[in-house]
Length: 501
Image 1 (cartoon, rainbow, N blue to C red):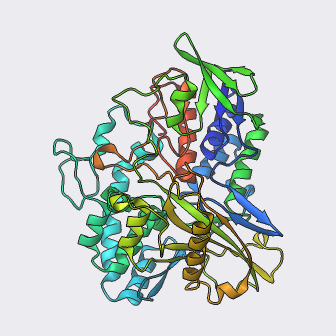
Image 2: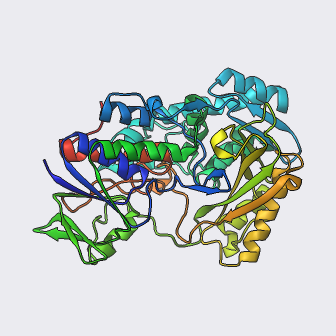
Image 3: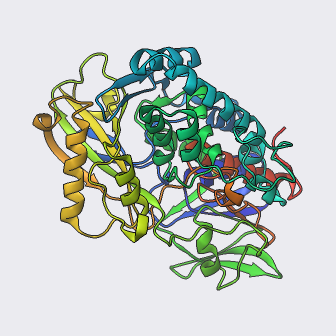
């Protein structure tokens, strides 16, 4: 039995902690904040409740596996998890709207043909089929296995629209196709382009620079479905936390780690802000790998040949501006859970968020995601409704409170396309801008020379591992959960472990 210190109580860190505890290790989690769950936060006031991070779960098999492997019971024994159907409704700039069924390829094709014209569904379906090829080629190395030491092969885009020889086009050099390139070439219709690129934007990605393989994002959603837990995504965080506690993982909150102890070239524990120390044979860092050198007193845990941590610089990171709306009046029957109201001027939105020519700012008319869960736990009674709006904004988005409130006004106005009469129903609102370093970590993607990969879970310091959305295999609840599974596999089975079978 080894002592293991885990830094942070995010979803990846807790997933690792639960698996390591079941393997017989003594696990202690040190979290500088007051609670657990990382990005899966919740804002509550006057009987209303709102998710403040991701609002839906994709790839629920990740957490089903976690609960089976750490307790031989289904995830659904802990949370009420239901498919959202329709998966989403999209309102485009020209006023056209389409509702897409959950996890139904044929249904999506039919819905797009009916709403956008004959042939629209077939064009979308053809692109998703190519995305499936990219998914099949990269699922294991980008989701189930430790980052390959020869990671550069993943810098070649597996999206098959540009024909390359071999699995990743070995010997042909990296492709440079972007998501925007394939959208314009293969979809043509600006509404289909907006549909595709909204998936990238929701993950903080600029479609003009993201690799063509980012088409796997709508593929995953359309294939594996969209799921919502009663109580919001925070309920999933609570369930994982309770599983850790049941497996005797120790948690210390308000415990900031200020240093990682290295002894004889190996991680040997952590130092805390209050002067205490904790000895450990392994340290699992559930934080941005870019912070590791400071905790290691200047030592770099990654070599020059490794995937480097992404520094928040250069004006290219997107965060999430969230507006929580408490509404008077009942949620109407047949209300769609998630509606995406697309921006009228796509180019202007991308320029504002990602800084074309250095001119970054809050977009005048952003793409707004409107969440209206049919969840009694989100409202004080059935005569009220909780609605959450979110939009991609630059990080940092500035300290000008008036500008942020004005952006929230514009988001609320846009959301009336999803909630008629919205502004007249508002009892109160809470505007939650992203913290200065709270950029949205996207899932790792192949292509573009490896720029969209995340630092490996193994570091150059024996006994020190990185976990969570900013390490391999990237961001989002499911990917964070897989990050935890990979780190636990490396510690339990050794650094030569190649991943789940």
